[in-house]
Image (cartoon, rainbow, N blue to C red):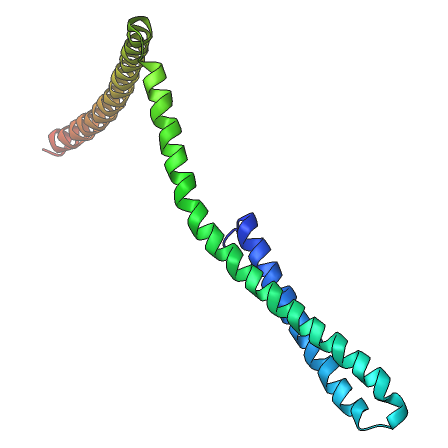
Length: 158
């Protein structure tokens, strides 16, 4: 499952809350209708319950709209954040090279890093070459020994 951002979690939570409120409002409305069939004495309670049910439904709709607003806000915030990050990277690069001494320091750093990489590459290549040479020599020695055995057997058989 993909990781959610805090904004996505908030939007999902609000959407879920809106669904729960909407379901509660529907149940409440059903109870209110059943109760309305009762006696006249319960009419005042039924009116209060209907008011509460309507308020719950309005709250659920408001929560649902808030979830939509959160998603729209996220869609607007993502490109703004990307632009600010790019700007910060450009500023950092400019600061790294804005004076002659800083630029010289960076060039020296690059030179050292390149030299280290070349040394490492040469060392690794030499190790591989030595290993391959050793393998070839061992194979040649094995073939030489086997050839000598075959020749000795042929001489002794002749």
